[in-house]
Length: 368
Image 1 (cartoon, rainbow, N blue to C red):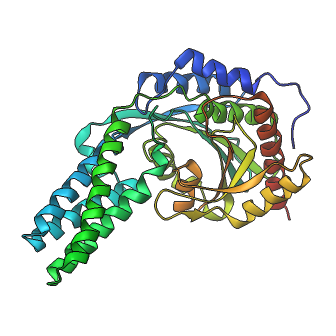
Image 2 (image 1 turned 90 degrees about the horizontal axis):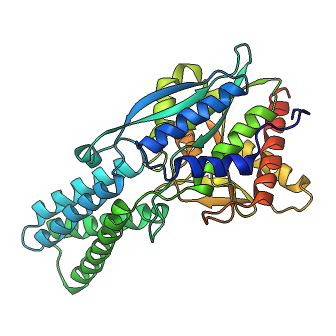
Image 3 (image 1 turned 120 degrees about the horizontal axis):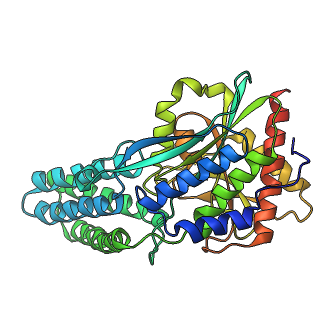
């Protein structure tokens, strides 16, 4: 249940302090390392243990996707005169892209440099039958004209369409209709390459909303909320904007401690602006459903909220909850309806109230 003591962490002030002190926080950067140490210190000041765990990261996913798309464009052109070779090039590009963007494994990006990133992990004391993981990412997304989460699906769709056309050529088919479809899909890949290069060259943004707000709210909830049946763990991840590599590293390293039937993950992302939203599904390529029981609990909290503003949503972005669902864990993301990078005190207060009530109901349900 929520604690009755007064707050020592003000969510709005904490989020602003993260941005003012560390600025843009690209995956694997010194600023990301700095905010990780800061968050660990804040957790220790709350009387919690906090460890900083390093892991390797390959952050250049956009540049890698541009390379893959470029190979597919070459394959598309080659397929007109040498269909088997062109189809092989496009197939390789499609497979590498899907493996990379889905988070299964970094592929082409391994050629573009490795950095060190880190997770901040604060476990609760032993003895509880389950673990409730409160997650938020420390890094900030790139400042670019296009949102990163909008690119993977159309990119993969164009790759697959070009691949189908190439395979039809291998089978001996030809004609104006096939050429037209392949031409349009190839042009789409050329546009995608331009957008991906712009994204790869963009500097990281200040990340006030995404995700200094989530980090600050996680710290406040760690201070405010006491659970009876779950151990409340806090996991602040690095390199989330590089296809959630931080959360995946955490899940791999601690898989023995995270039982599938006794672990719940609640991800806090961009909660500083707009009305409260909770995911019903999310993911960049093939969206995964948020855990149905968690969605039902969020609906109950929304119905009991005086203004009734909280509502379900679908997201195409990669998140800590998406990585946890990929690993078979119960998970959901709490976010805001406004993606702009600004902070609103009323939005943060609403997200805090909603999240605290959700955690309390998850805890109560575990005893039912």
